[in-house]
Length: 265
Ligand code: HXC
Ligand code: NAP
Image 1 (cartoon, rainbow, N blue to C red):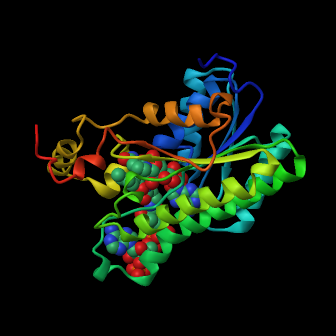
Image 2 (cartoon, rainbow, N blue to C red; image 1 turned 90 degrees about the vertical axis):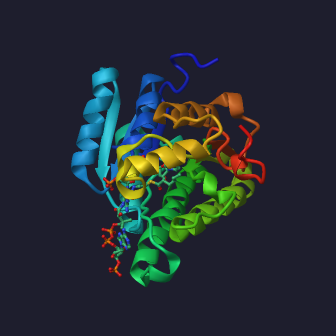
């Protein structure tokens, strides 16, 4: 279904593309012929990510942009640099995120704002900047945001992230309708637990945490970043050309497994 030239000549911006899930998507896109733009705060994340991509895709075309999605000026510069290097932008993956476990009653205003600013406001700034570029160019495009499966349930322990991701889900539905006339499709994926060092450091530091989470997943295993890349590749491909405003859950059945009779083995 996916040929090696699926994304030939297209340009994809992946925020947070130097690590974890973002890097897995960037690698996949590069292997399918796309120009990839990795954008995040830490230049060493970006350099390591670019080196990883070139190791597996030697002729990859990779641009790195050090920026903070919380700063609209940085976001505009990211789009300008991408257009300056590759001519236009066809795909945006809103993947950058911040998260940490904290009880709601202990969360400071600055802690709340830091996650809301990265996930909710940053996704808006990036979508707006890339959307304006796609609308002006008249070439359309595809935007995919990375949510989490707790958009369906809420998430005790990460209220900032749960609220922000739910807001991005609403943004996805809203933009899908507003921008359909510009041939811009807007979708999202909602992963459950996926192996990733960045998330592990913030959210599941101990072996006991990992074991408890594994037990909660009906498929009894963690997802791989490549499985998220599979789903997102589908959503940016012509094979999903009639899908917009939707959310694809990638969680081994985890959120459904929270039902009353979830103990049945
Ligand atoms: C309580 C905390 C905290 C913690 C930070 N804060 N960590 N409060 N518990 N563990 C508070 C700080 O005290 C401060 O508030 C405020 O948050 C901002 O902290 P800074 O360190 O100044 O923020 P900043 O440098 O902007 O960093 C943002 C960050 C950080 C979100 C706090 O963790 C980060 O950069 N994360 C990026 C990577 C990441 O989180 N990846 C995981 C994504 S995984 P005060 O009041 O003291 O000033 C994911 C998976 C979800 O999302 C789904 C799983 C199923
Ligand atoms: P990760 O490696 O920590 O990824 C987060 C990325 O966001 C990093 O590359 C980070 O790069 C970037 N970032 C953070 N703040 C930023 C900012 N202000 N501006 C620009 N970039 C910023 O963790 P991950 O697991 O791969 O997470 C990727 C996405 O998947 C996130 O949206 C996360 O919520 C989602 N997700 C993950 C899981 C999971 O189980 N792993 C499950 C559900 C959803 P810098 O530090 O260089 O800025």
